[in-house]
Length: 313
Image 1 (cartoon, one colour):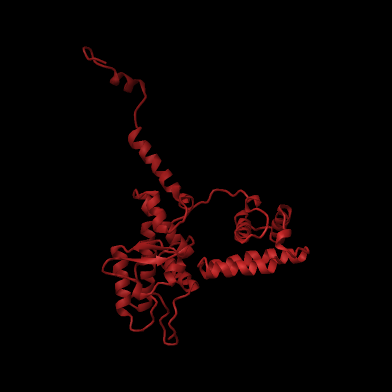
Image 2: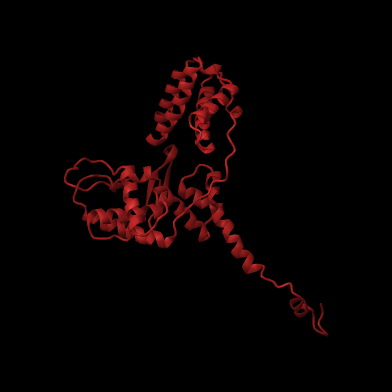
């Protein structure tokens, strides 16, 4: 099978059968088109011709073309090739076994989250204007639900039950999961939606006279809102929708939530993905140690612990 045909068929499969988001499909296309270009440059026309050595040469070309490319980013290319080969094997195409494509070892992922007081400052509307109420609702909903930005953008007013404070979202892999609103998020969302007079079905959208289309706010628009709110709140570290998702998971674990429950609320297919947040529970181990192992081992303590005369030891 031609390399071009194999990649084209796989991307169509991702779009039609796997239900991947446009963002995910775009990334897979970019990674695999880089492989297609490498194959053209090296006279590899058939996908069955690719060997383990070829994949290593392709990875080397990535590094030479961009010396600052991280190992994590290199792995994204390799993971996309693995996925392509798994798809082809399922269709009886004889290609290199995906297990023979070795990923680079990467340092443990460090999660950075916002503190609750920082989120509180960001979520406080500056005025009662519709844009300020919208931005306040965005922060509150992201922190309350842990939603991905793509899930937030696709959210429609008809999807939300403000009385029950919960609704369903369709996440990666077309999987549906419940999400829940805190009292603050419910109140912020109510204030914003009550001020809406337009017929746009999406929850978060632009509000100015020139925009009458029924489209949601863009991911870039969401990021601009967060940047503005962070600056007003005096927060100098980077803020993004995904950082609010990290903050959601971190807060749950700090308050004693079970890792499996957090996995379900984040919509992770594998518990391994959720385990990047175990740094939070690891920090709690110090508090547990302090509370339950704060025993003195000084001579004075040992003398105090000896049984008094007449006591049975």
